[in-house]
Length: 338
Image 1 (tube, helix red, strand yellow):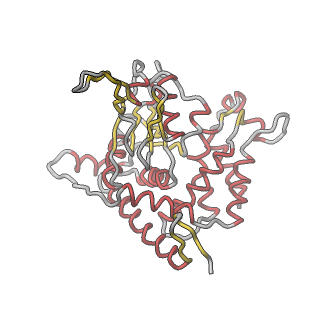
Image 2: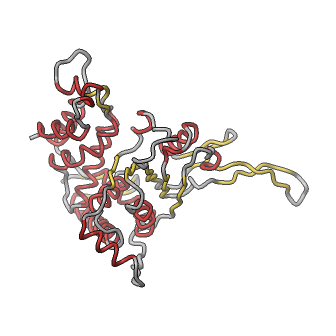
Image 3: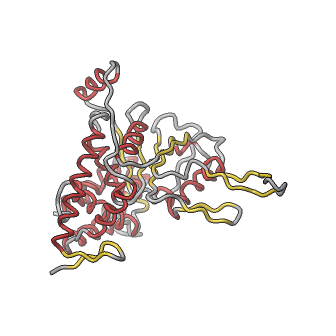
């Protein structure tokens, strides 16, 4: 009989793990349905964002204004039972505006001392709105916190709450005055999720539901503690050797070889590193749980390849001149998986 170790103090057999995964999947489905009840026409965006959170990562949301990116974060914060904050990034935003600062206080005995005042990054679900509007120094302050799960100020370490997730947004329009995220910082986002326009039926529903007196009241389905337990369960979902091989084949084939004669060598300047493989493995496990399955498939690898790989790859000048896109390149790679 298979034995699964979920927590340091808990060892449970395969029947128990199956029961827990199925129960967690039902709760996650409730979270998705609740979010879809107030965010219309963005089912794929909701699903991929939830997958990112279940996999323990951060997401970069790309979309024009008014497509419910802010509402998505607020809604997920409510149904997941996570406190959430929002930071509007601007060119004059300083690192201390994000992580916090020290103030001089005088005690009852007259002695003065510095006290650290925590910034808005000390939350469980953070929306970093228009992250590319801020200077590289300010971007780095947030991205370092995302990676290390703590901030340092005046030589002292301050741990962030757990779980901690960032949903950052970028506006594809009005690029003047922006500071694009460099490759190393983009790699810290598990997924890049494109938020497009809703279709006509969904937009009609938005129009009718948001301009009247009707209001959908949401309540917490999970809590921070429950979410941590589910994230631990996701890590225990088994992955077959065939699926592992598919991940490795996909990611390694996406890397150009200097002097090579493959299409990828001509079309791509740089490709995904090992973190892409890790992200893809975690994401397909989370998707399997969300879909009510006990193990991911090769189809999951193909479905999530684009949002996980495209911000980790760059087209060559020749490919751009020919009108090729990253999406087309990734599609070609996934077709070889079988």
